[in-house]
Image: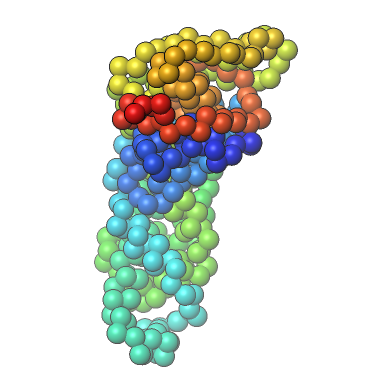
Length: 325
């Protein structure tokens, strides 16, 4: 699905700063990067059955694991600051390192703080890389062969290659010399800078997916069945669809066929017409994200886009209608 406009995102409460939206519902992220990654999912619906089912399987997998030890909001803020430091020439000794650092920062009052940040960040990068390696190895040993996990493992291997294991253990234990600090600061911020960035992105992806897995725990949501566009009759079939933001919501069955795809929905004011339209649209949108939907069961074909022009001042969370005075 590639055709989605801002009006539709607001009408379906995908991203709506005025009221609680889908991002808020699924957001249990720990890191700022994880939240940004989750938000990016909502702006980029998937367009193939393979992509959607892959994300579905990954979220199901994340329901069975625990990665909280890898996620630390403030640690990642420090690491982002560290990786944003300017690249510097390699120093072969402690003396030349200090000469270069002082020549660059001799007017800075934060010289010592910078050195502390560098040392702490080297340890934390080693810890994250090792933690991800262990997590992905355990996933592989349990028979989880999702392609995306293999891709994540490649990024981890890219960081670990050419690193001395004994030195790496010293980094993990946070007991390493000034010489090793100089060596790995240069390695991480210069030679392997892009690989480290990929590691951060892997962590943010896992944070976002783990967030979805946590948010749906104990809730009546299901993963929809995705069908390719064929000559079949059924386009959308939903059993027990309900609005994500209404407690004790009334459920509805929806069936839209290829030859019967135009509805005339009538009824008195404040009887749920807009809510039903939003519910159907939300289910279709979530299905194209690879996320679970608010229904008992759902089957849908892939769509090229989705468009809504409800544009009413309803507040479902507060039970307020456009016509309410």
